[in-house]
Length: 509
Image (cartoon, rainbow, N blue to C red; front, top):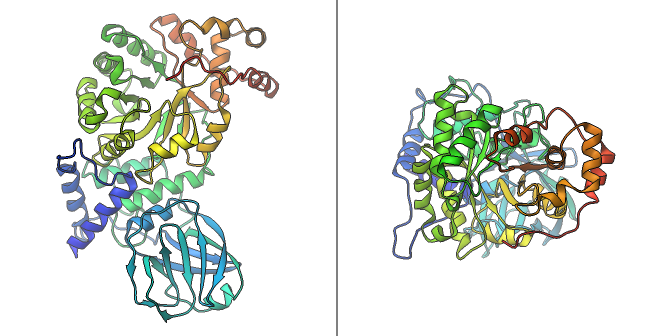
């Protein structure tokens, strides 16, 4: 039983991270983390006396037909994990053969079809990799399906489905009165990694799939619940100056960029920024200043300005490291002097970047990365191509964005996945800042608020839903850039800023 449970959890881990197998060369063994495997095994093999128990039942899936609800018992599979990440779904299902309803999803799901031999009333199956089927009659079949779950109490199911096309909602049910927080995500994540937890977890309602065991599947459902509680939006929390990522972690919405800074300069810039209130720091392997960034963070920690948990650190995989992306995570951790990275991005499109994305997923699985994303991908097609190796979607896309290039269509396209857009070069980049700073619309708005053009531009980024990371090594400019939370642009001013869009980027990365 323990072995079966362990294998199920490992397969769920792979889907949650969207990794599949990843290796850094064709002859290498698939990357595995002994520590994470051991921690999952030890977690799952805890006895009922040692594992915290839920005080009440939690979530499972149900289908709803008009006012009738039918609870579903899950299979433990990659398919189920991927499907639950898409819920709730309301589908107009079609009739077939007088015994089933079906619907072709827009998205392919992981599938493991097998000849089932016999269909039972209440079975829910996947045909191929995208056709969702609900059976309301029992019969023998020679077809192959991937099992999703079963409706144990089928009383009234056939009548509810009828013999015509019907609208069916697939959703999570159970303890909908339970509200989860980011701290709950961290608690469960630490528990699964066998790390000390910040709170006593006894009695916590963390068994969301109601199978009696806390697993990564529960973590996936919890993150989904938090997003549902916030209506699946990527709206910014201006009071706390953060946004909730689809990974379940909070990200500060205004940070410091360190492009072109050497180690010494980066250390001082980061220290000054943290002293001024910044909590988001952006670097990259390519910048060559991860050591300086890490030193600046450690100085601020040593001086009592921040704790490690209060600082959100982003770095990026260098294109020349794409053939050893997983190993380069450890390189960045060592240079930064950290035991985890808050966000790691693929720096730009490049050879084999879909495998790089899998490597980042593996980093999440191993507890080295908390969130992952991509940078310099500007269309939905590019976004979906690079992430095609798994079901997890990027928490962040970091691109060139500024008033002259706003790319709002792409921002809307990926918002449905809970993905946030982050702006590098918020002022247009070196050699172009005066184009924006001297723009008549921007200077006019700045005059009305008694602010600088830079502050107006940054405030526009935030109100337009862009996390932004202006770069500077000048202490006065670093403070000026952060002083954007004490005023607000009007709707009319935001419209004037929107009209500055030309559709032209400065860079071609």
